[in-house]
Image (cartoon, rainbow, N blue to C red):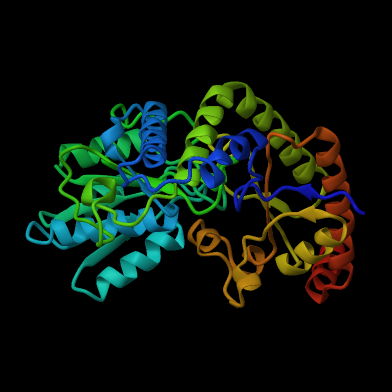
Length: 394
């Protein structure tokens, strides 16, 4: 069987053995409903309480400010929809950026159909939000600013502290989608003036189907799921105890290993970037060169299609993803790559590689060599590349 080189950790990660081990008792031994009064139910409730405390400590938050969800998408929906509902009497204007995850963008589109106005702020060529434009967009009726902590495609880290300061100065709530950043970057919600923060466990070697929304005490956000008294009456439904326990274990592991782990990832990431840019002509790095997630590298290769590149890499046992949305049936390239100014033909030839803690230098070397071969092969079949080379030789 061919060895798999997994470089799509921004999509999901392998659940760590320690996380699985921590979760197992809550499937078959301590399986009681946390709302019950008997002992095995009490053990589940205790596990939730301890997990909430663990995650809160990683963020510098209070345990009662952590609300468990089914993942980052639900948390994003909750932050936007419930805030819009709760603060409707104050205003109907929301500010976000053009490169947000679709969990934010599609929720904003939904709110626009229900009487809210949304301003989508531009980013520069590196994907960094234009702070001057952000502040100018604020109106008396602005109730929320939602800007992601770090971009899921190009890895660019936003100036979150400055955005938080702007929001606080104007008395506006600030939400950040930190699905890619939590566990990869140090985050202290008070220092950054964050009022709400979304996260998801499966991005940091935790289980799928569990996330949380941090809601600062005093934020008058409404309940999102109705039916029971769970999550302090704000999010009904029997708690996913194994998932919650797994997330806490993953969060603690990520915090404990962050400094050493991310330093190693940065070194490998930079090695990967340097080799790709120096050895494959007509290649560009998307996103900021250094102000990016430790494990993220996103490239555009001229004269090729990202989907073909992905398929051929998969045949070599290499798992990556494309900046192009063609794999989901759309003919349009990534909205993120278009927002940073890439023309359609270049945006279509993109490849995102995201490293994990198990990635080795030998794997990176293998990936670079195979990518070089595949890009050369694809370009040899490209009429656009043929025309380009003929014109260059004149």
